[in-house]
Image 1 (cartoon, one colour):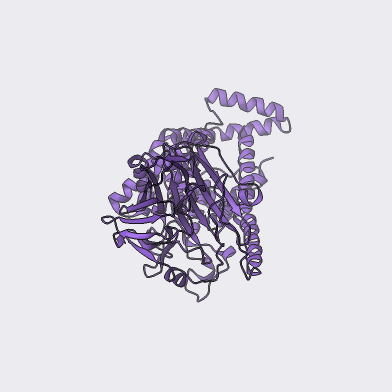
Image 2 (cartoon, one colour):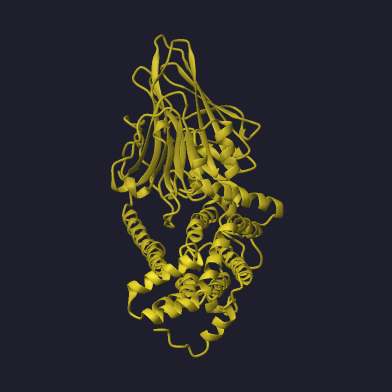
Length: 594
């Protein structure tokens, strides 16, 4: 049974190494090659072909040429009339052509850990290479005349700057006598309210549908990994959560979940998102699509069922637009305050969300207590160890008992020789007599795997970890350790190749893992012994590219495990073989028992 367990461990580690190789080398390389090919293709498109605007589900939007990407951001912003946006969290402007949100920056977040680096730009005009915007409009008919769309010029009729305390009002009256009055307000974080009052001053009832779209002309340049969703996202009523990758709509037809009542839609990046919350009482269709008619672009849009406005009457249509950082408490507060169904799923908590979210809450609590997420990780590790203390005790007690009967097992091996069946039966009888469960040491490890994965998700996904410092050279717990042994951790004046990058904390983690494994006897089988020797080295290089916060957690967890295992072994009256194993490692090794 002991050999079987070791074989299972060897197989699992082999699979883990193959998976890591696929996701951390092969997949990024393929994605990089694909992006390069796309950029080369776009470079050949010197002039943009004219064409219709992207269609909302089931019907085309109002016309207009697709803009080329040759303009600078400042020039594109400066050529159109705008109303400024200024809040504690946001700065930018609303384009009065189309009443489009296409100029937005996040004041609280910088591109690098340097506080003097540029702040994050979320939205940019469609004429720029990084065009990204949100727009609310209508689809009418001959009876309605021209309704607000991409080319509509709105008039600023109330307010001169959008702030949390000063909303703005835009108006537009078409040639049929239908007046649209749009009031836009914003809170102190990232939520806009867009309330349209539609007044029908004609002699007949009119029907029209609202639409909303989030459109971007590029996608993240760094390839995402399997633990994080980036791309289209939304909740389509009874159809539930929708997560659609960019490649899905590039290769296939647009994704249309079906008609929904209640929900939201948008595009999400690792830390930022832009979403629209349509009128919740009116049924609507959602679509996620990719357009290649000239300039490629990605679009998440909705089209509501038509509403009828009687002569002399008015109706109100309310949309919400979220555009900003996916801060956990802010997103959760919006879900409650605006009754947005499952809006917390804008943050990709993963399959183990029931572990991931509580773990984040615990880490956030300790962060608010001590002011350092690195310390919060260390304390969270202690809490997790305490929770699993009974299981770990069983694990280490089982290992200690296994060591007690090691001499008897060696006698059985000599007695039965090549008789494998007889040896297995004798060992099972020995386990029964000594009341040992040889698999007891495996279950605690298996149970803790989801916890480790959940912690990885917290560190990798949550924006609270972005640019969060620890101590010393660790200024961003969400990024790999920036030091490397190749240039003597920065003493030599050159940068090491990425594949040779091996920082201080991964080395510390590798050492603690090596010491933890040396707490146990070296397996008699040469293959297993080699695996025990090289596994810490493999994990050291694997984790060199992982977020520093996760590596610090692993190193600290290993250290606590060494102490815990040593104490339990002493209590069980079993010799701690760490120092003997270290001595034998550097001396002539005895020949393994036959």
